[in-house]
Length: 193
Image (tube, rainbow, N blue to C red; front, side, top):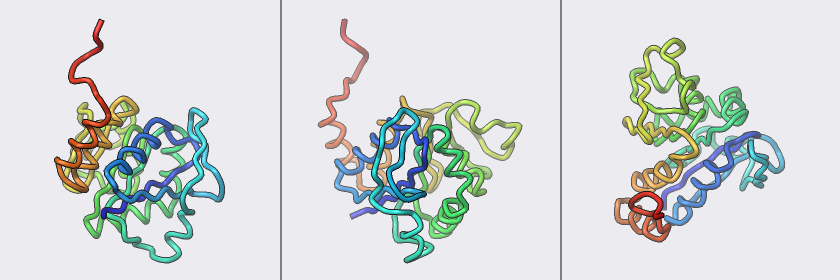
């Protein structure tokens, strides 16, 4: 069974974090949410999550924990809080060396950029997060989801389901992704009037 770590910082994007956790668990992927500090973590819209573990405890046992993927929800100030946490940056660098999957959505691709992991990569992010002026060596696209090697990025709350389903496919296969997606009852086209 694949294992995913989702660090949660105060001010995470509620829709992104909850949807990603939910979708991955629907695919029977083991998900561990990790708080940066002790206690509940509050999202930017007021959703409160009690993390499964404390990031410090996970890293205390192993500075390169055995996860197949780390996924960073966006939101503000959540993404900035992740970006400013040296433990998160070190974790991302260590897992990148082991060629593990690193996912980030919305403002969180800036965390991967801060860790120096996006140079010469194709990515997407919330508009204005990764500007050519600040990151001239990153190829920022407008796509909903972009995969470049072991880096998977997505634009924002509206692309979260596509992002989560793509993560499922990467960690399992298309058959599992299709099964999860079918149960969601997503419409093939727009709203019926």
